[in-house]
Image 1 (cartoon, rainbow, N blue to C red):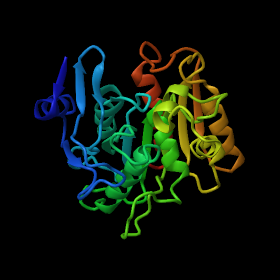
Image 2: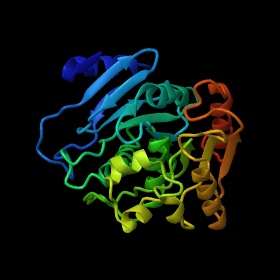
Image 3: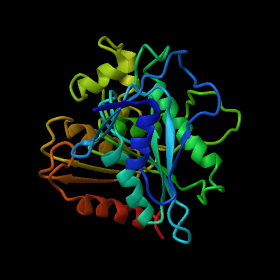
Length: 303
């Protein structure tokens, strides 16, 4: 069943409730790269599938802070997946945020704009603008939220993994006007069964078409193929996937990890023999998230 506007927001907030959570607009003023159109966002609430957000044109940040006395100063911005045409706000968003809170990590679920020519002059950069703004906003308000400004990472699932990896490889070029000078570089990346490349041979074509359209230029494809954008300043990454993924080719992660390694960026990759896309049946959540937590601990982001 589709629920709209104010009633919709209630269901989404309910599904994301926990600890010290609230939702705030990502931008305080006019949303950059946006057209003056009526908000047509839709939420499909299904307890057996997920809380699905469609037609997002007004990006928000849902704030999850760990219990008082447990915070360790680390924070992560979470980018749900959904092929750039929908966002899985619960399983790849709010549920993950709560688990980070148990580790003492502040979490921020990003409801980013979904690419659409109807709402943006340039739909290809809209999600990245939102990811960059999310990192900047968390860093700007770090003291308020008991966060250390040099311990802010980004996490993404599937196409949200593409967005997270894009934020981690394109931070030298801010796509929104920012007079504060605050860094938009994430300090680490967590990529779960991620889309990385938009090339013909590796890319998830559905995600590419929603982000770039049906006939993207070679320049656009290369720019958003993140395995080609890694440098020595790219933040370290934790990458996890299943070798039997038939939705997003595992080679996306292989190429990205190899690019990180060749550039001297210390990263880690885990490949499960089974799990397909989404880890719906296996591996258990405790298994893969436990490996993620161990990586964070080994790198000093969990004390």
